[in-house]
Amino acid sequence: METTLDCVPCLVGQAVDAVRMATDQPDEQYRVIRRVLSLLERMNFNETPPHMAAEIHRIVKDELGVEDPYREVKEQSTELAQRIVAKFEHVVAEATDPFETTLKLAIAGNVIDFGVGVDIDTIETTVEEALGLPLPYHEVEALRSAIEQAEDILYLGDNAGEVAFDRLLIQLLPTEKVTFVVRGGPIINDATRADAEAVGLHNLVEIVDSGCVAPGTILEHCSSSFRERFRSADLIIAKGQGNYESLSAETAPIFFLLMAKCPVLAQQLGCRIGEILVCRPTGGAEHN
Amino acid sequence: METTLDCVPCLVGQAVDAVRMATDQPDEQYRVIRRVLSLLERMNFNETPPHMAAEIHRIVKDELGVEDPYREVKEQSTELAQRIVAKFEHVVAEATDPFETTLKLAIAGNVIDFGVGVDIDTIETTVEEALGLPLPYHEVEALRSAIEQAEDILYLGDNAGEVAFDRLLIQLLPTEKVTFVVRGGPIINDATRADAEAVGLHNLVEIVDSGCVAPGTILEHCSSSFRERFRSADLIIAKGQGNYESLSAETAPIFFLLMAKCPVLAQQLGCRIGEILVCRPTGGAEHN
Image 1 (cartoon, rainbow over the protein chains, first blue to last red):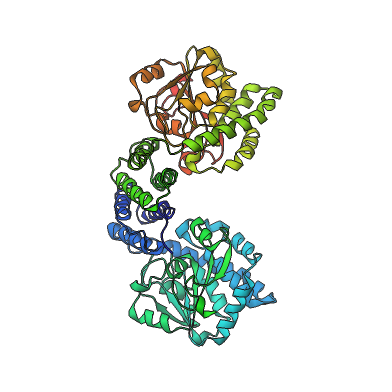
Image 2 (image 1 turned 120 degrees about the vertical axis):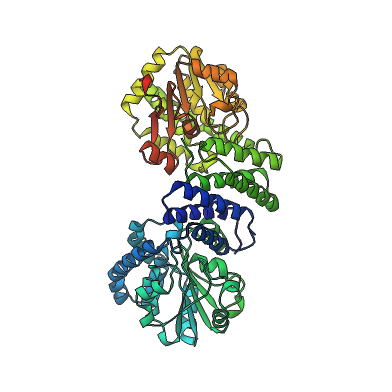
């Protein structure tokens, strides 16, 4: 998915958030925002939004010497997510279709994204609302069937905290066939290995990192070992908007699970903001 | 009022809107947005937001050779505002305090601001809601009394369309003492002389332009004749956020009438977004 004009102010806004996370010195904040504006001015707008975000956050971290500005936020987010998940476990236990209910929870957990400024207090309400929303029947059934047939499943995580919701879904999958994928290093509030381990995912499945430090999965920036696993997997479950933006044009057996959080994406997917979705790559029609 | 970090993404967003108004050629849009980013990078963040917006919109207009990208929008806005005002005239006629009701209408009309992306369909509802909101009693009474005592009233307009609402309020003022002020040239959807005349204001009061082409009143950019009138007026009624941002630190007998439309301003004024306000300069306490 290409970056659009509407992504530019949003990327600047993300940089403002990150700069504030990294320092409370106004002079430093303005200095780094100027560097971000200079970078954006020279950027290739044919790249995907996660590609541009990666470069922006690299500059913020390098200039301010803070490797992980969101570490505290991620820890709070993990702690909160685990509390919320505990409250919703009975919903799964009582569900007539636990797979579909857990799928909704896993997607709703995607709302825990400090990268676009979601208010932490509204998460629980949003999760409850998401449980009441419909999922596309045919895509859910296609995913159910793909899981039954798959021998090698990659599950691409998105945010810290959200992984506690992913854990609920992964518990219903054939865990011996599942590998959970985290980012190659800290980027915004995205899940790294530490965030996945914080919710115990390493006790359930293998965890690998993509080698790519971006809020998405930019294949050409990933490690060669990850790219090999990506190409050999017969099912890829990819969480969140960043993975969609970076992989939507790939020809691969991907199911995206996400909540549409911005007007650019909502327009591309033909849905409303806040809708929960199961969908496949625009370029990958051969793997129905 | 100084520009804050939060103003930066908003200014970029305004530039995106303006570029789209001026051309539908993506290459041109991206070229001009790069120029805007370069300008912002070098800008003095101690200037007010209207000062920065003026420079940004100057670049958009110069680069694309379009002197008034919002002309059509302003004409539609004027036409719509006149229809809405006609619907609310009976509310004024039936009001127990026509001055206060008209004050609310004039402030509510400030919502007609395409500069921050307000949906045209919601205007009527917003006006109705604004009529139900309270205004600060002491400020309303202070303004009523200032009007009674004033010999020379400057009324600084804000947006096209909104001037149809201003007309309702101006009809209740001693019109022979009132001068209506428009921008020195087209800037976003702000009212110029043509927009004020389109609602018949020239039949009621004298109209002058400030000489300043900015979405606000930056005194050092105004004509010397306007500055003289500004300094000699014994009451200045200033509409909208841009006039507030550019004049809030002045020592002058100003009453600002506005709706708080952004979190930066709402925080500075200690109010909620969407609140309607009558307030005075932060630096002008001596003229109570």
